[in-house]
Structures are given as C-alpha cells and as structure tokens.
Length: 271
Image 1 (spheres, rainbow, N blue to C red):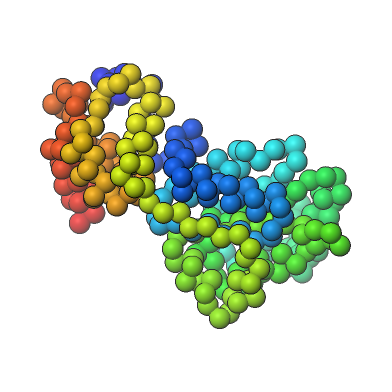
Image 2 (image 1 turned 30 degrees about the vertical axis):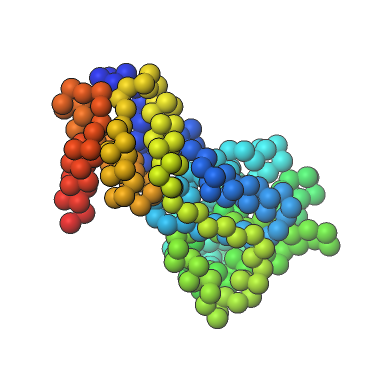
C-alpha cells in the first residue's frame, strides 16, 4: 500500500533472505570473513551460530554468491530433518548428480569418487547445512564421517554448519565430542546495537529507492530497538507496520506512536 506513496521501487522490509538487502554490520562482516577464511584455508568444519532472525540465511546466500563458480561447487541443505541415507542423497543431488545410489554404503562410495574426480579437476566442494541444530545425532555422526574423506594433501569437503543458539548446546553433547574437536572456525552473530540498527534501516530504505522520505524519528528508532532487541527479522516486521501506520496518516514522518502501534500489532499477532 505504501510503496508507491513513498516512491519505493520495492518493499524495503521484506523478511525474505535477499542478499541485495544485506547490511554488513561489524558482526555480519566478521562472520562473513570467518566463513571465507574457513573455506579458503580448508579448515574442514566451520560453525556459524545466531539467534532466530539474526540474518544467518541472508549471510549464507551472500557468502555463496561470492564463491567463484569456476572454482567452487556448493551443496546447500535447508531441511536437515532427514536420516543418514537421505542426507547423503540430498548432498549428491545438490551437487548436480542425478543417478545416485540407494544404499548408504554405496552412497558413501559414490560420494568419495565424485569428490575425488572434482578435486582432480581443480574444484573445491563446500557443504552448507542450515538449521543444523535440527540434525539428529546419527546424521551429525554421518557428517563427521564425511569429513574423513581426504587425499594425502587436503579434505575433500569443507562443511559449514549454521544454526540457532541451540546448536551450541547440541555440539556440547558428549556424543559429539569427536565432531566438536574438528571445528576450527566458529563464530556467533550478535544482534544489532542501536546505531547499527539505525544504519540498517537507512540502508534498506536506500536500497528500496528512498529519496529521503519517509524518515524515522529518534524516539521511533529507540522504541523499535528496545522491542526488537536488535534482531533484524523483528526490526523488519516493526518497520513495515510502522510505515503502514505513517502512510495511513499521510505522513513522511514515522514517529513514536507509529512504532508503538507496530509493537502492539505484532504483540497481538503473537499472543
């Protein structure tokens, strides 16, 4: 409703993980550098942890977009609620293989041969598992065993585990001590500070074609940050509702009362 009124080319506060809207706050930039370092230095296991809505998936897409497709093959697993055989099949399918084996033993053999062939051709393979806190212990162990696939000089697979804060608890379990010892790169995203949130909101408005309107007042920003705790997904929801409130008032100013109304609406939906 408010897109044409404010002259946006697209809606500024969608919650879909579009890398174009990624605001690289200091914590997001550092996380991205950790991912790049882990992969380029062939560290094997990399873990990225963050609260729900902190931007892990968007950051992941940014990271994948910056990997040279002429050199890297990637497999992105978005649904980790699978058994060991299903996980192996999903990885091979993501790598573009169509005729995959049926048994787990044959799948592992096929995986090893495919990875060896690609490494021989100068390729690097990166496996990214999102929402990794949902993996069963059996699949965690299968992923660990995949990290054993190697030549005399390097691992055949670089593995990135991304997940919510519960992933830290899962990895602390005694059953996963062998996997935990192999994690050489680990980073935990933190929420935005208030200044970072202000820059984030301005960034999304600018990317959407804002020419200086609308603008958020200091008190609106303060209320949004206090309520959202600096979590980008909640910030997006609140800003979208606050913009709608300002639009209904036919105003270029998003004020405290618009932010307060947005918080009330969000609380009503989640009650």
